[in-house]
Amino acid sequence: MEKILVVIDMQNDFITGSLGTKEAEAIVDNVVKKIGGYKPENIYVTRDTHHENYLETQEGKCLPVKHCIKDTEGWMLESRIAEAVSGARVIDKPGFGSLDLADILLARNDKEPIEIEMVGLCTDICVVSNAVILKAKLPETKITVDGSCCAGVTPKTHEEALDVMRMCQINIA
Image (cartoon, rainbow, N blue to C red):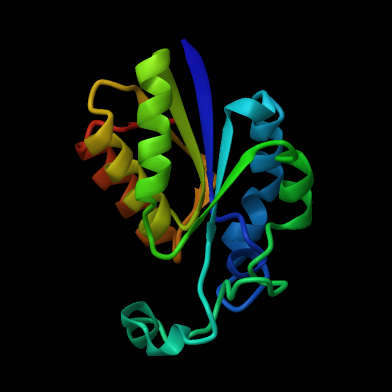
């Protein structure tokens, strides 16, 4: 059984940029260390990807902070993360969750059963969204979220998101 690592949105804007937090900064070294335990071909990385019209979108109207605008510094993976995931598959996603990621991992699981571990940002938005999508697409696949390698918008919402995932039978490490 192959062990897969999914790294969610470890981008500059979520770490030190327009939506950055000290909690996000604090997990970077943990995430880099975690990545080091996986082969590049078993790592999938998502990037939150928006365009200049972001503020006109539904998300932009609810969260009116420009972030992760394609090809900007804020959209890029944090430099240590980018170096650590060299050779991994990167998936750009236009919203919180990625159906493409779920389809890719379903196809991979059909060839050989996999286990999935997830890390990244933000626990309470994109991590939980992708974890629930993956659990729906792969209900018999073991999915684990490493809480020490995730950060939420706030520490409280981070913990609340971990609780929601536990309730959905996603393992929390």
